[in-house]
Length: 149
Image (cartoon, rainbow, N blue to C red; front, side, top):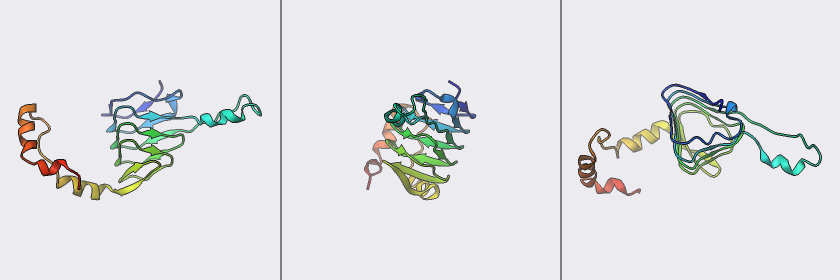
C-alpha cells in the first residue's frame, strides 16, 4: 500500500485509502478500528467538466507516540504532532501540534497531554497482564471509576 510505518506500531485498521504512499506514521502509533485516512479531496468531482483530469491530494503525517481512537477520519494534508491522543469518532480537518488530546467534529484541542495523564492517573488500575477473572474482581471493587463525572 506504500504507507511509511515507524517501529512498534499497532494497527487495528487498514483503511489507508487509495494513495497509501501519502501516509507516514511515526514510531509507537496505535490506529484503532475503523480509522480512515483520506488523501484526496473527492469534492473536485463537481469541477470535472471544467478539467476532466483534475485531482487534489494531501499527505497525512502522524508523529511518534500517537493514539488514534476508533471511527476517526483524517482528511488530506493534516499532520498530528507527537504525543497526541485522538478521541474516538473525531474528524481531523487540520493539523495539530503534539502533546495534546484532541476530539470532536471538527476536532479541537481538549487538554494537554499532561492534564490528560493527571486525570487518568486518578482512575488507573493495575490490571493489564492479569487473567480476566482477576481483572474482573479488581474492576468490581472500584465501581465509581466506571462512570464519567
